[in-house]
Image 1 (tube, helix red, strand yellow):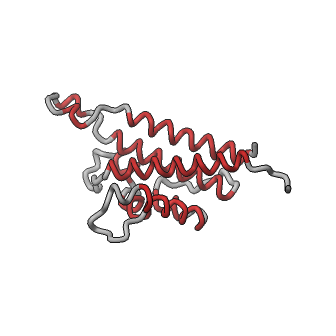
Image 2 (tube, helix red, strand yellow):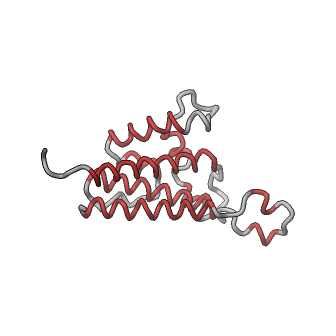
Image 3 (spheres, one colour):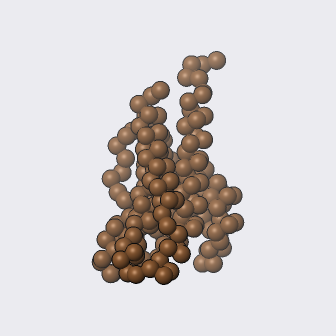
Length: 170
């Protein structure tokens, strides 16, 4: 297996592990009858979901360019824009097929993955620095999770195909 594929898979697995961890967090009913001390987890889930998406996009980048030196940014739209156009198109087409119908956005008639990533482009730093009140604290968790899961699944499909494709000409 090439170093590119190994690096991309490791990054993708880290993204998936973070995503799985967020799935084990208490649901919204957790704090209904709780005191304020139990709300200390607020902000952790969006931050970790954004980090997971960041890693998923970086895994795509490594796979696209055979280069482990990814863009050093937490900005999700910059990371998406750094992917090859074919990868962007593939992810957008799958988003429109599998995510957009279940997570419509009233602001956009032609809802795309770019809208989700743009809306949450700085979520990692915004939610990491929750104490800085000048940030936008909007986070559409359902749509973001569905988009993240789709990106991870499409990446996994991609590297599984790469693994079984012979490297010698037939």
